[in-house]
Image (cartoon, rainbow, N blue to C red; front, top):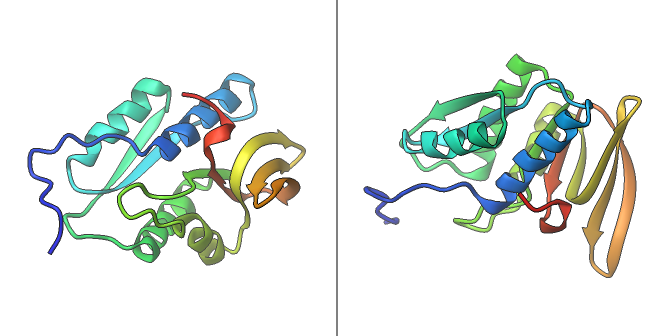
Length: 160
């Protein structure tokens, strides 16, 4: 069983919206050259990608499937996209809003053998690395990760 999605208007996950906004801010600051938004899902996911393009993404890729895809499946699909596109930095929302899974970013990092920073509330890029302040139990932690890297974003990072 599942939720019937016919005639449901799709919208972007708020955490993913924050990820797109951060990429835009980094591009405006001259730290990023291109923003590619990616979605894995049914044809209706085009609406979400159009939102990303309207926000300022340069390109969008829809990996179309009508099947329910679990976080590991999404990570495997994204791995293929990342290998084809060769970015230095991949932002993802920290979790999905439909199932509250907080797994895809970490799994993608492991599949690519890339550095990762989770729950980012601040990101600064310089000299082949990212300085990421992340939210942890009891406060904030700042780490440096070597690029290429996967960064999952949290609510404090920005307001789209």
